[in-house]
Length: 420
Image (cartoon, rainbow, N blue to C red):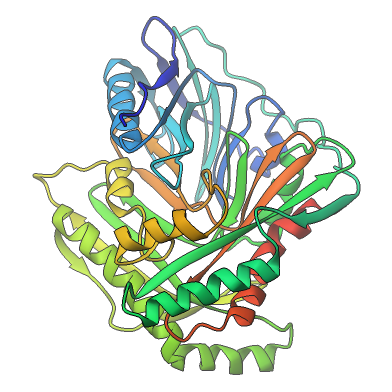
């Protein structure tokens, strides 16, 4: 079945983007109005945007190719006046892609206004149909309102049923069908008032500043995993696989981190994920650096085994960050090993539609540079309901009860961000 052509909303003429330096405007999320807000931030740096100068929606197995073709055409015809010339200035699109070939929609959005910060540089980019589009006053937007009380309920399947699914996966792994599969589950939060996505975004950015806080077209979250960054021919990818829950006791957590670093189950899961990323990126690189052993990444609620893979993009490939993200997706960290078998098993037994959860999310500029993370620790807003997602890597000696506890820990960031 072929996918439909992209549904795009673009002006008849070319886009004109103008970036200028501005004084420090303060916290970027404080500027964000409730007008098609978009965000990609870490430790106070990054970009926020609003409005939509152009938009592309696509789906199916060709979603990355169609999105890439659309963006190349938009960027090729655009006029870009960039006085800042740092990553994130100039014309860019924020994007979020479906996990699976079917079902699920993917989206790219070119904001009308982007405000960014990188180091000491702050800038604003305005996008319109001509060079007369005025630069907005950068003042704090109206405060987002609380969603009020929140009630949580199981999504696609209950916790007990999910443990049964995990046990089934373990049996099939031990039978030799595959080495690893990543299984996810969802919760549904119902709030007293419609959710203003800026409310959880501010809390996630404050509490999880080591992560990339994002929002694109109703999907928001704080992901610890950088799928791929491309910057002036250099690429990096952070691989996370292998998790342990924190206790809040620093001494105990250090002991747990040491246990995680020696865990054969978690090291095996991590090795699969690193191998998957390295094999996917190697054809695009003239050289690569793949560390032999992982480090432990400490987050407020969990700790992960982590490896940073780096490479130099081959001149002949000229692959954009979007094309690199497409080559990497789905990695073993969100699909499994072998990937094709694992993704088929996910569709067969997981019991829910992931939508854009665990798909690439991030931004791309007119030169093909940018950053894409994996949409983890995330939720999808629809009125006064939010779907929360969490997943776990299942290998031969996975324990269903322990995996359920790990999934519960991964719900915590978004659960707490919705609270009043």
